[in-house]
Image (cartoon, rainbow, N blue to C red; front, side, top):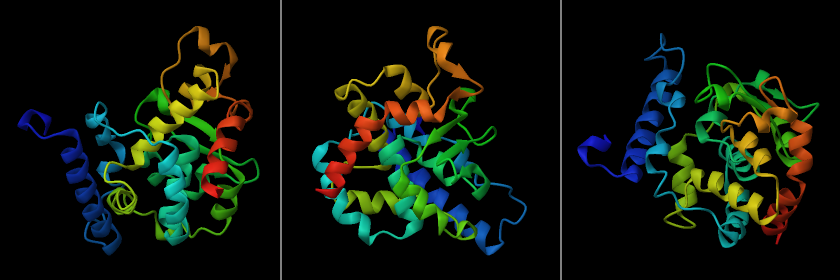
Length: 224
């Protein structure tokens, strides 16, 4: 679509709409033979990487007013993105078995990640874990387009991906080791960064400790 002259934002909008339509058809049984929504396997927001708005302090504070109005199927993905910087497709592909609520983690599994580097296990804040304990996974998640419509009611430039960029800025301002932020986001790590890694990524408890100051800052804004 970029070859047709469409902007990244337009591509993201059109793909989000189509993704929502496919999800509805799958739930209604019209696409019974389709194992998963093909749009969930593509990070089509990447095309607007140079145009994506980065969430700032005011956006987090404004978000605090929206959160109580969201349904859990929208609320949980937003909170995971805010605190963990995930891609929206990574959250929407998650099933019950991808969450370990005892240890407070989420696994981005092989086959549902954007690439090999994106396969990882990340820590979740306690508030998200508590919401997940009551979440009816069989009902599915809110679509990216639904969530983005709600976010743009706060700021026309704000999207789910804005918080992925926001977590990078917050990590920098809180002097978090860049390798920890890269591991959280599912970016490819260099050989030198692999020294503290086992399996497919950093120990989630290492990431949890590294993110403590970032999460505290976000808590302050959301509870302000």
